[in-house]
Image (spheres, rainbow, N blue to C red):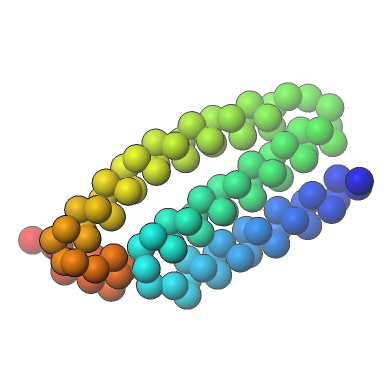
Length: 99
């Protein structure tokens, strides 16, 4: 399979994720779309790494996965906190938590 096909797939996944972040209002869906965008970036990093014959892109993808795992922990804690106080996971209601 041609490496360019993987880059097209990464671009498609990133576009779907970006559209989901811009269109959807549920915090959980927005959160999943951000993860989809990160996975698309990882796919592009690994593809470019394979095309150039070095491991730099794979190392960057590994660190991106570590950051994404930390983001999941913090993001889900924030979403649960918003849901407990407002009884909804809407992004529009999150601005009401300001002091």
